Image 1 (tube, rainbow, N blue to C red):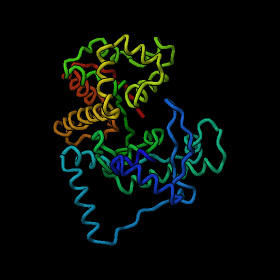
Image 2: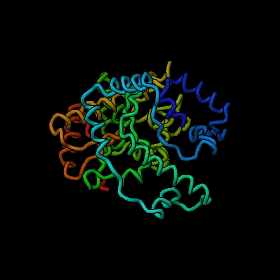
Image 3: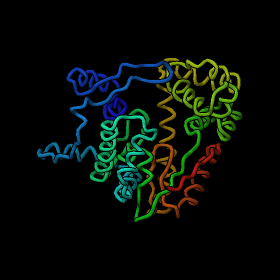
Image 4: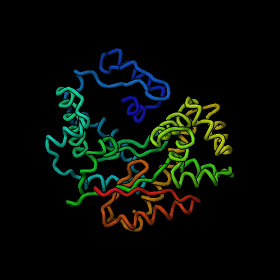
Length: 329
């Protein structure tokens, strides 16, 4: 929830809004923080988690302000193209039993909590179908946010376009790859690091730090890249020993502002995925369906081969060759 506030508001305003919402009883917090593992959990209080619906704005002046802001948001042709594609998306029917398995895959929650979560998922789908537009291009990392991004992946993969199921092409180790690109552009030695990213950086570091791939991924992204410091010293030592120049760049970049590296990598990701790859799709195949989900793109099965070629070509121009994971839904 706090992340969503930060999409809509600047950091300081989001923190202030959070405090006000808690004080008014609109939002609750679990007050459980585990360093390096879990942030505080925020969510709407039960009274505010009931089904919501869209309300038409009655004030013409406010409507004009909203429309002007949205027009400014999608002023780039590629953003208008993405928004047009969002309007083509529908969903295959999901039975109650299927939705229940998505809401509680390990069958551990109470019936009331499962029903609440199922209702929330269906509401996400309804709200997206009612308003398939770009919500925000955040100031922090220039990421493009829309309704499909917020829908749980297990539901998103039930999306249809012209009656066809979709395929998703994901850039493996995307944030580490962005770091390799940024380092190379700055003349920092990152050859071995880039090679490790192309193979599987998370597995490479995990094996040397005594962690599983997923554990190493969590530490690298959440601590080494996106926190004030890396609390897992085993990973920090491995990274510094194997990639000293890249590690030094990380530390120097975060020295005065620990959020600077995160911002830098997200902006690079958006520039490549949205403003380079999707823009090329738009120019070369304007009728093609494509929607970016941060570091991945969703396309129709017939366009997978072309999209993979474009992704590889654009990354090759930048001196890297990341792995691509293709999932047909």
